[in-house]
Length: 166
Length: 451
Image (cartoon, rainbow over all chains, first blue to last red):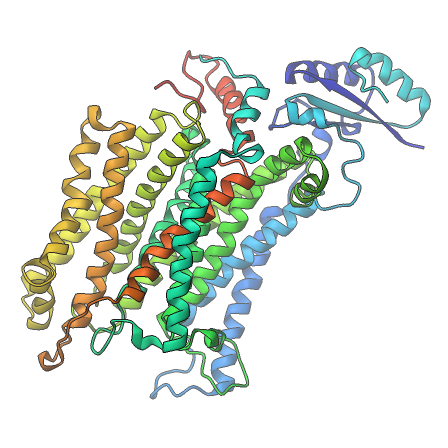
């Protein structure tokens, strides 16, 4: 059964050195999660952090959907109510375009945020299981996923006295 | 390079107001709540008696209510727009400033959006105006700039709340970790289980980046659309093609002034002298100076064109402002928006915290007067002179004008009690960014530049 080993470092440099040590001992970078109170930059794969984000794509999709909603709202409502326009066209791109524009932006914003919450794995129950509040005091916490107890013992030996007491 | 303070000190300083507030905070809350309560009372009286308790009458049917609407929507440009521009351009000095600014946007928008509803004859039926296909036999008129306002303000408000909330998540997690009991549960829920992993930081930065890019055109559109409430009408001195950019420039102008005022109060009240430093006021002062020049340019262009055209209906409004009944207000506006702030902000020795605060206070007053002068003189002088009129506000309108200022202070005071007003993680990150980017040169860290 997979288990996690947590280690606490006072500085980002110490954490970087530990990550390098773990990698040189054959621990895959994807198995190491680095937690910090501010963005820190550690070389390597970053356990998915550098994988391609689709937030931008979702923003575009949201924009298209928002714009389409704006078009449908203005065009269908005007036609279904049959507004009196004094001989002017019932659908006017100039005026309706403003509403479509606003809803386009709104769609982009909502979809981007929704996707960000999903990709960042936020709002999921039990997400704080392998977390340590030392992060709040400026420490950098490493969480290393281990396949079994043997590899956990090996990782604990590598990380030495930085291991969080059970 | 200045040494980075210990994390414990940064946390203690920036979370001080969240942990404990002093008597000053309680006094601020009580006084602002009382003033706001007086406005609620006035609004209750208006509901009971009808809109006739206002001073508006034919031909001046828009007055303080719409002045306040335009003013507060303008103030809202302090935050999200400025913060987004600073983020997109990578201005490192922004870090201690952005949250102060973003909070202003949300509160100012909430207040501004109240006024059209207050202004309705029957405010309790405001939802009748929501433009969607309905069974009430109403026609949602998508051609109306007022309907455009509905969409623009709601989009901007939604975007601004999200834009405020996203960078707040790591700080909410920080408070969660430092709290116990119910407070911990509440902040735990608000922080969405944030752990500060590399993945989360990367996604947060990406989302904030995208939001910043999207929100700038939305912010510009909001005040442009507010200007079109006027410019789309064939009214003297309203029907102008430059009203859109003129309003946007004025909004940014008043927004920066409001931001400087808020920062000065927060700096003093929360003892954040090490974080909101003179250099921040200097940079914002320079922005305010630029906007002062742009405002003067737009105002001069607008009035010169009217004067040169010499069209009688336009000149009636022009003369009422420049040399008629509204001239004291007009020249006060010009003094407050240009002649007072310009020298203060242009002379380096005067561009101190005190100097920028004086200039900003003048600008806020001047910009409120400007909104009034755009609305009332034009309505008081319709094209047919037999229909000219005057306007005098009643006590109800005056209370409904002063109350929202107190409401703004109240909301801001509550905000600083619940959330750190300077983004803790962004401030800390500033040192690391500065170290990375300036490793070859011996500069000051961007987050805490030298005074």
